[in-house]
Image 1 (tube, helix red, strand yellow):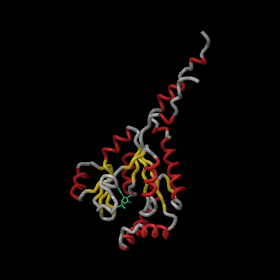
Image 2 (cartoon, rainbow, N blue to C red):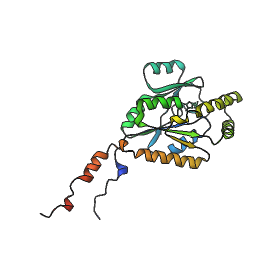
Image 3 (cartoon, rainbow, N blue to C red):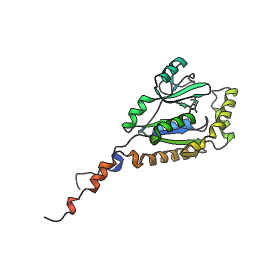
Image 4 (cartoon, rainbow, N blue to C red):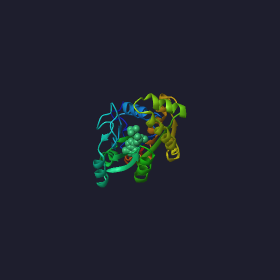
Amino acid sequence: MTSQTPKGSDALQRRGLMFILSSPSGAGKTTISRMLLEHDPQIRMSVSVTTRQPRPGETDGRDYIFVDRNQFDRMVEAEEFLEWAHVFGNCYGTPKAQVKAGLKDGQDFLFDIDWQGTQQLYQKLETDVVRVFLLPPSLDELRRRLTSRGTDSAEIIEARMARAQAEISHWDGYDYVVVNDAIDTCFEKVTQILAAERMRRARQTGLIGFVRELTRPDPASGEPA
Ligand code: 5GP
């Protein structure tokens, strides 16, 4: 046995990626996001800023950074967002600082944002972005999921159903589309997408040195002196 272990491509330095999971509310995005964060230590959530009220069980700084409209407008003015959008009469935005620094260090970020935010991020940081869209298996199932959450009024559910259909019409602005009919299968597909995207040549910033080492003249096969 030699004392030297080959470095292996998993240990190579790479740039982080921005993994965007979008779907209409109720298509399973929150569950899949939670599973990804639990199972994969290399990815962390990009926590958005919003002007909407916290829902029961939501924590400031973990689920969202909750601010009032004045604070949000000030952040827009100061160009603190990578993107922002109006959704359901509230404002949502992705803070710039943590993501930009993290990507350089190989940190992956998960984004739970809508199609407008996805478009803006793609325009700004195209090569770092991977866009995944989750679809519900049917409209009936979508309604069932939205109703069983039990936190919103009938009026809000109807508004969300209408918006879901509008949101679904943006499916073609994504790199991958996954139908979420069974959560475990959907999760597996999403993790496969993430694994493959991490291996993209352009993201593996440590490759040049690694390959240079592999292609240097091998003294062991040299001519005897
Ligand atoms: P909710 O209020 O149900 O948490 O989110 C409503 C919608 O806003 C969802 O479609 C979610 O993906 C989207 N959203 C959350 N954060 C952001 C963000 O930072 N930017 C954009 N563009 N959309 C967001």
